[in-house]
Length: 111
Length: 114
Image 1 (tube, rainbow over the protein chains, first blue to last red):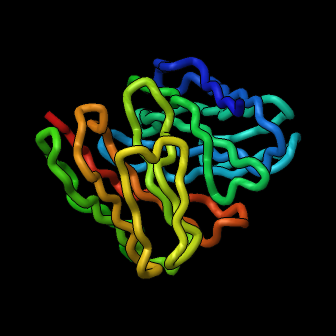
Image 2 (tube, helix red, strand yellow):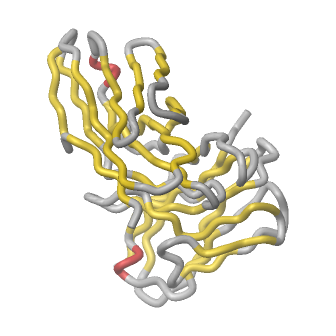
């Protein structure tokens, strides 16, 4: 069974304290790994797509990386506005646009 | 550009009542889908559609019906609401079903069934 596991479940950081969020997956035929940000009361907002091991993508203070078994979302010098839940999802071959989501990581950044 | 619009934002139903959650997108996306989000669980796919007139089941389809008569609209119908259907429902769309374009989500409908 395809699985996506995110850790830790929750993370509290001080403003400026860099850290990483983990997404590990056990799927066959990975076509893409997606990171989303979700604010309270809102729908998930797309951040990145990673396609193959070794790939990296950056956006402001966020950098996503991918290996054959896991992905990391690195947050450099976070600010309070980075507080949100970060979701990881995978798409496998032959599954149309179906995404399998992890449970999410709730990030809180204190000023 | 409105993106994906869901109505209503909140709804309370009694057990056994029926209702339709509305979803519309203005991006000319072929693929549309419904997810539910429950505490402690990841988003789970209910139903999806790869184009007008075509629908299929996701991983948790029981108790829900869908239809896709136009490209823009993809309503989700609850036939006889049950407390287990209390959840937040998200509609999402993407350009095509076979490529790797990201899903765009609406802001959800929070449903409570008493």
